[in-house]
Image 1 (tube, rainbow, N blue to C red):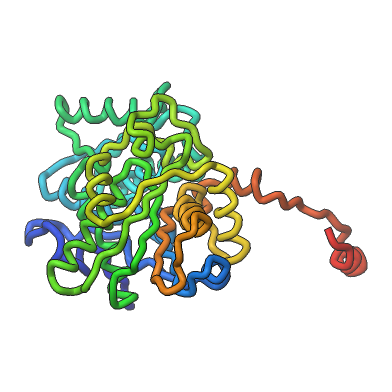
Image 2: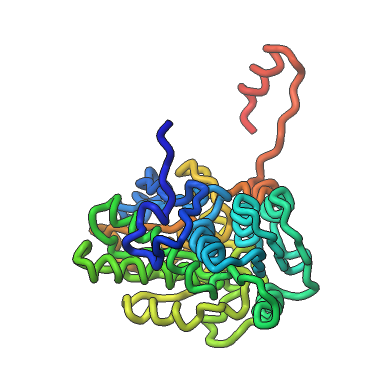
Length: 354
C-alpha cells in the first residue's frame, strides 16, 4: 500500500534533523494548490492559486510545524508538551501527542475558541485549561511554565515549528516551478509569514528559484497590533485563529515584510466574511474565517488599484471550514426548507425560487 510521506521525510535535507531524529508523521504536507476558477478572473488575475492547508491531518497548517516540534521533543527525551492556543495549535499538539505517547497540556482563552477545534483537542485526550484571559495571557503563562518544569513548549516560539512550516513554501515552488510574484497570507501570531519567507529564501539560496515573492500579510482589523504598531490588549475578531494582540513572531514578520518588499495590512471582519463566502460559493472551497483574510487582503489590494494581470499570486488558506461550523451556520444565510416525503412536494419546492 502506497503511503504519503510526511514533511520530515520529504524535505529532510532542508530541515535540522539527524539520524537521531525520529521520523514522526501523520501524513502532513503535500496539500493541494488549486487554480482559481472564478475569483481570479474578477480581479484581473488569471494566475491565482489557493494553497489548501486545511487538508492537513488535523485540518490546519499547524501540523507542518508540530511534526517537527514533536520529533525534536521525542529526540530530546521529553514526556510532556504544552501550548497556548486559539484552537488549531491545540488540535495539532493533541493529535501528535496522542500518536506518540506524549502527555499534552493545552491552555486556551475561555470562551474564545471555535467549537470544532476544542472538540478535536478533547477527542485526542489532551488536558485543557481554559484561562480567563486572552491568548496572549495564556502564551505568557506557558512560557513561564517551561522555565520551571520539564515540559516542551510547542507554540511557534519553538524554532522547530517554523522549520516545519517553511515546507509549504517549498511545495508551492515545487508545484509552480518558480516562486509566485505575490503570496497573500493571514497573520495572527506571525509565525507562518515568517516561515514561508524562510522557505523561499532557502530555496533561492540553493538555486532552486530565481526570485522570491512579495509577502502580503493581513491581520483582522480588531486584532492588528503589527499594523497599529502596538499590542492590542483586547483583540476582537470573528477570525478566532488570528485573534492575537501581541504576536510572538512580530519581529520576524516585520523582517519578512521588509526584506520581501511586501506589506502587512488589515481587513475588516465584514471583508473577511465576504471573502469566506466567495471562496465557498465561487470556488467550492470551505475554509475557516481566518484563512479568508488572505483573499480579503487580495481583494483589498485589487480595489486599491494594484495590477495583477500578469502576476502569479498564491493565497494561503490556513485552516478547514469545519474548524468553525458556527460561523457557517450564522453567516451563510441559507435556511433549511422542509417538505413532505413525496415527489410532488419536492418538485413544488424546486420550482419555487427562494
